Length: 473
Image (tube, rainbow, N blue to C red; front, top):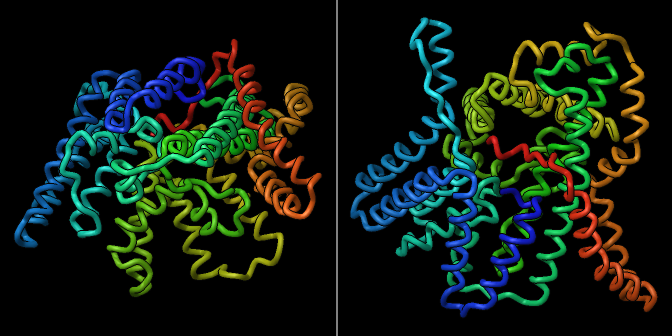
């Protein structure tokens, strides 16, 4: 079940809000927990046991770490937490990858088990790890009640696709949260914006991308140069609008009931450098690697050699986190190279607007590496973008797709910028000085959320094409 589905909107979420607001404060968390477990079990009931088991292990180790009398015992329990959670993540996500590569080198094993990747395992594993590490560092208190920790790890707003929520962010709100009318409105507005980004823009961009550069398709093998550029542009828009929309909806649903999750995106396609891009893209993941890997290794306050080592470890793990395939490792190395170039060579040498052009080109080719797991296809697309091995420069089909979707692509591109936010803020400021502007601001604030909801529902009705990219991670 995805947020951008009619059954979620009009059955699951509507029922959740109704029951949540009908029961007394004493039972609100239990209602959330029940609905969260049902939501997770919807995508794979067998793996609900895995989520509960990992949470139980984390609850146990955190309690033991907090009560341990010496540092050695605390380290032992912390090591146990890492073994259990990272071991399970490694088995489900990477066992097949390593066995396939081992068989390619040595011819064994003859058969490789079919291991299904549990939905959201990377997200809730990292959340639980961050919780236990923070207890180990004595930055937070261990949660004494198991089911409340399970609520934290399974909360359906963000369990299966983020953002990765640190326990300290919501620790107080689990037991003590208050909801104002402003919270409800802001939550509804954010959810409707996210739903529209997903249902109207991301899904439409996905259709363009899949029609031109679907991995394994015959169309990809005979695509034109402009077809590859257009397809990758659509994919570049899709992956941001898709993932940021999911984060918008998660933040909106949390806000409606008093949870204040941290932002996960800050208009990354307006970045002025690759480093700036990674401060804006999937912020919760970048923060996780910074706080739990990069800084403990020494960060940048060390020798040049150790700094390069630290960066290499972080970006190898970043690539691996996204998937068990060589292209994700290459993707991590690709960004490592540009980050090191910016640190040691480029610095501030790129002038003015060229910074944005440079950054967007790096991001564009990064998404090419990210999209194609088959290395043969990856090579073909990378060379094809420069006119090598394609079936021409611009065919009739590509021209038709471009002309038929030009306004969609323009609007989707604008949606990747803070233009709408800037206009809203300017109108709000103008409203403090002008009654007419104040009236316009209030009217738009009332109209936009229901209008976006209606348009999104219309886009979803009868449309079975509703992919979500980050479920696979």
